[in-house]
Image (cartoon, rainbow, N blue to C red; front, side):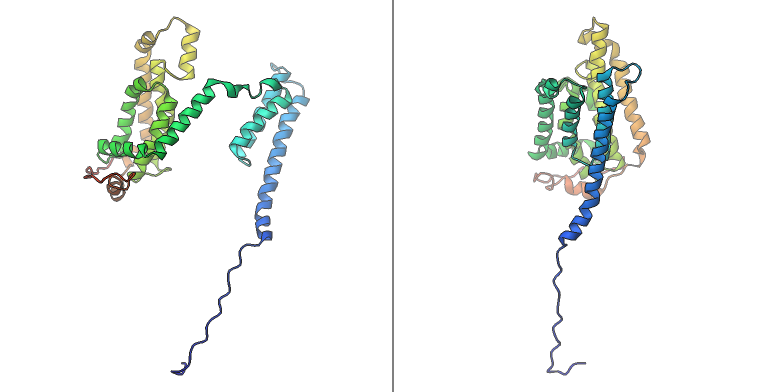
Length: 293
């Protein structure tokens, strides 16, 4: 006990020193060594393919491409460098090893397909940044009436009519992925949950089947029709609409069963809040009744 007129001595507090440069270097050195080792191994893979005799059925150029493919796969799997850097490095190795003529290594960037893909990804980013995805999420929430399962099956049923309006599956996904991501988050299903995984896998894989049925997309469908010859859009649709749509909905059912569709549930509190003003600042509306999937 201290006397009444005594004051307790102030405790001295020592400032927390920021991490020293030595500590930072100690943390980055192992990562740097790993990156250098993997990059060195990739270069050795690409170069060694040109030094050894060609495998049966491959000429020298094919052997060089095989080595670069292995080197690129190593870089992509380990991710020791950014994926964009890996992509440029693979092209550079193709030109350096003779897999592709050096003058034509980067000629693919002049293809209209590249600009189409850039436009599609930019469109998806714009849908998310402008709040259009959030507005679509509001509509999807109302249509599903709070049921994750109903949202999933409505999405599958919407693929065929959307393929008529937007033929390219890539463009459809640029619009749909941000909208469904926002909707699932609002329903308490963030990325990584089973419902989110099933929805995104359906968008990535099954959505293409709707374009294949109309012959408006899909490398397999377009190449097959060209090889067989004599196909028009109408004839292709009449012959293959049934099998393609069966594959679409059967694949959706398999995803639903494999990822536990019967166990999907909605976080009622999150969904009720998200259908109000928290989505893109829209005025709140009376939330739909929430039900289990």
